[in-house]
Image (cartoon, rainbow, N blue to C red):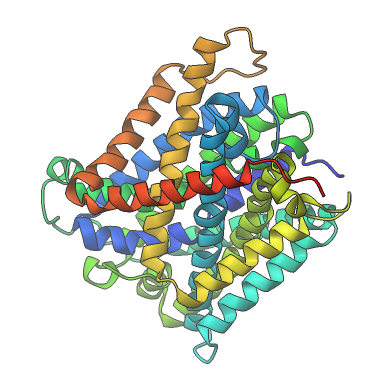
Length: 429
């Protein structure tokens, strides 16, 4: 089995982070917050939150380098039942749902570039093609992912350079409310779910930690540098979006990148940028397709009742897990609403990420002698800040809508019942 080197691991982080969120989220944020400064503030907070999380995951990944991400880490830190719940929900909501969301956005942007293309069919084709690529020889999938990610970065830089030459005159539009008042509101807390989804992927390398070359060095570098690069690109893109188009045209719109490009450079350039975004989303979908199945594969290795999903040849990707993930994603493409997908993804990812980052503190106290090739910078401030802000993001919407807690409790109950069955010994034949 080929190993994932530092450059590929960093590109995996970048590809996982730069997805549909940066090209679709700001329009919804602006509609909810009514303030361009508040939108920029949300992206800054999201970047700082991602960096704090990245530092913690880098420490855990270097100390416990096994495939599976939160599934393996939460199993090790807390209890197998917690790890199982994280694993099963991450496979379904943390990866299959983002694949579906990326595919839907891909279809919409491709249709904006070429109006005759059916968006839903394009979305289905993207899921199928990327799944086939990563089911083939593993090294081929790694190289293809690197190429697609470098291409995505080039496309974003081209847009930033071209966009900066346009009339950036719309940033000073009056906000709906003062910035501080907006920042302590429930809509701002909910907006961080959307931003959190856009930044999700900073922990991507941890899902393949067992396949990384020299994880003690590679994981911290890939996680931190990938997060730094993406945060810079996100802030630059949002400045172009918000300064390049009036709020009335951006608010509540999914194709915010195309709208800004059309305002800045004309409708032909807008269609060209829509095509660029669609191409970039291919890399993001591929990153999710590559990382998500490693969780299901790791669970199959631990639970005999799931052993069938972890079987693969040494040179190929985890074909069975990829196939299962593709089927779930396709069902979501056909039936799910984009906004509902993002809200569900944000809630689940923040919950498990918060518990995982808290695990850095738990292990420091419980296992002070655990070998730690890398220790998180800024400890304990960075993990405490991440956990505190994550808790606020989760609790504030629940206070406003208590039915969310009921749905979450029901989902956890179903997950625990499934764990009770899965963890039982397989009867001897």
